Amino acid sequence: MTYDLTDLQLFLQVVDQGSITRGADLSHLSLASASARIKAMEKALGAPLLIRHRRGVVPSPAGWLLVAHAREVVGQIARMRSELSRYSDGLRPTLVISANTSATETLVSPVIVDFMADNPDIDLELEERPSHEIVAAVTDGRAELGIIADPVDTGRLERAVLRPDPLVVITRPGHALAARAHVAFSECLGHPFVGFTEGNPLQEHLSGQTQPLGLRPRYRAHLPSTEAICSAVAAGVGIAVVPARAVVRWQRTYDLRVVDLTNSWAKRNLLLCSQRWSGLSKAAAALAARLKAHGAPAATPDDGDAEGA
Image 1: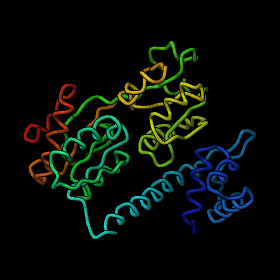
Image 2: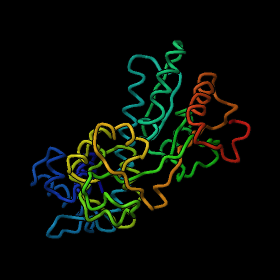
Image 3: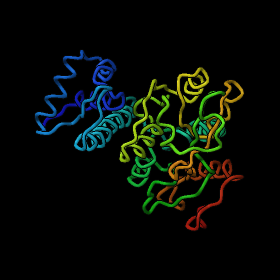
């Protein structure tokens, strides 16, 4: 089997859209070319990757396996380009921190701005990644600090809880779900969704939780920011799953209703992690202290954090 990067990106677009036509369009390919590529992939494998029906397509069991590997490959190439770009001017940041989407939008950015203003001699790069990739980056030493959601296995990394970070459903007033206090994700699948763009760590997290169960929301739009998603939801484009903390800043601008998710994967905490607190560079230790202090009112370090908290 010889699948090239275009094949993998096309296949992911088709799966996410539930349509070869829409997947081809987003991949800037003609429908004939996209169909031919997918048929060639299936021929090379000797098994169907997509199950076709009147309303579109869904992955076959082999297709779901390809989805998992394709996301990993496409993500690795994006990370390779990002990491190599640091060397284009002969410089490397003094401090690298990786964080998931919720952390970058609601916690890290203001802390980093103040930290860098107070420390003009420190260069810093913030990478936004899914939590499981952050664990790998910190474990491998590619990032000194990581901020992740707690359902992910952190291995031997030391960690401290920063604050609760639940995921919620947002709707506009008058929506069928708007009056609910809480809802299971499966109950939302009859409604159109608005999500983050492909490659967004939170979107990957949501897909990772739902795809193994055979749950696939119908997305009307994939947008680049929480503000854009809130705007679309308020306009009635669809509903969305977003971090509860991220919605708060936009509720003054957009009239939204927030519904708690009952699923266990939605009840998360943000964790700060490192290989060893005692082994952090001076810059990383100073930033870690600020992050812990910023999250302290809603956080209690776990049992393994006594020496590093």
